Length: 212
Image 1: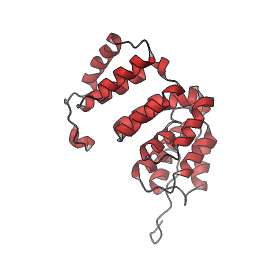
Image 2: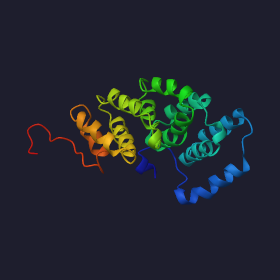
Image 3: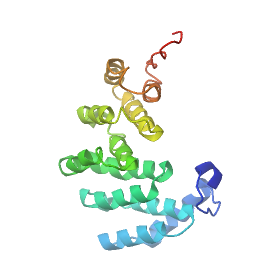
Image 4: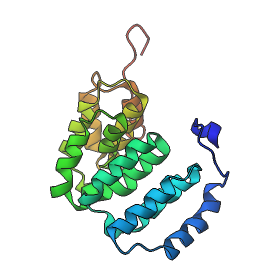
């Protein structure tokens, strides 16, 4: 498991199906009654050396929706920076940040807008993925602005996030995504275009000097 995740962190070696009942019991036995208690349990789990404990921390954080408010965005940002890898960042982005962005847009959006300019690439990735599963309530103008703001970046995880977020929105608005991709074929990376255009018939243009 450590080899797959490319990490030196230790693992218990407990697979995801076997973790589910443990996480379920964790949430049943330790229901937080205050924001301070919620933070404390999350951080106690996160601080344990085995990586599955980090997964438990995120599962616990996701479970208690009463704390999914803009006030917790700085806390979740800390977890994103501490996690600094896709297995935790993506879970936090799509299951914690995205619902807050959707359900509290007026207060959450200004924070997320600052994230897209953050010096930490994982925070920028989270900002892009914060539009995940917004479906017909997606702020399309902001999502495309975020994608273009990071389109110049060479990092794989940023390019992948752009493609992933657009591909997800293409389930709701394939025409909008298709037009956006075709209008930005030379701006977006081939990876982003390939990911976003997977199911809507858009492919990256051939590289210069190659046959179409």
